[in-house]
Image (cartoon, rainbow, N blue to C red; front, side, top):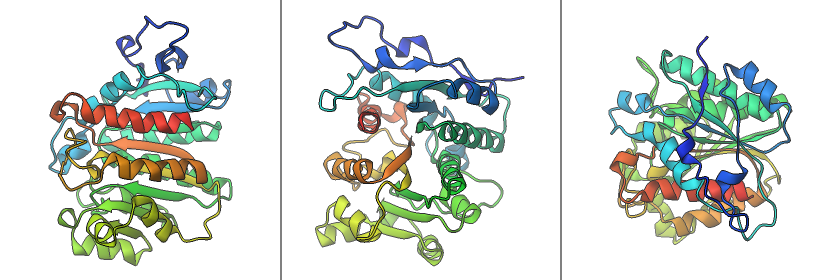
Length: 326
């Protein structure tokens, strides 16, 4: 039987660490590579709840969508930056981290990979853990999001999915799904999901796709409109959610790194100079982490081979660090 997961390379975990200057590498627990979702369940069920970290070294969905390759390298490079970081010196609690490894994509079709990813994420959630996933293509936003939605519904909770992205990613599935289809798939599979997209750019999306999303209840914020309003990302999110949002609501945050300007994220599968800045994004992220019950966060479409001085991988690592610090 082929293992569903592969352990990360040991060289991503620096070892020369002093006790008074710890790093995330010194506190993360690397789990044995799971053979299946049942195998992962057996491992996680014995552990205190924490954050389960999973990588998708796969950019097949990007290739199928005609995009630039390189995101298969992202889980390794984001971890390279992340595990050198210290636990937060602002927050007093030290996170409990479990490194699950990378999805093993060899010998499996793309549908099989997605099915396994969904089962692995659902297994982690079922065992009380929050999930942090590193793409890979944004097609993995579907298994990550649908796993959380179905887990929340099994608990009689109403989930929320928020996507930060330059693209709607609601293209119809024709011959196959790809990195442009994750949220069409989500809303067709779970049509009553509350879904919001922020950071969209007018030159990246078609009228037909926007019309379809709004026809099924999706809500959107385009960058052009937000800037014309002189509105922060956080104010835009408040406006979409309304004032009566229940607190601690189970939420999945999907972050396509191309939502950021290429000045900050040059190593994106699709990169534009007109995205938002980290200073726009982080107050919005902090509010979500404080106000909502963010059970899962995924970062997608980082392409290290297109990057400059690992700038984009480091931005992704800082986003991950903020999540883990909460």
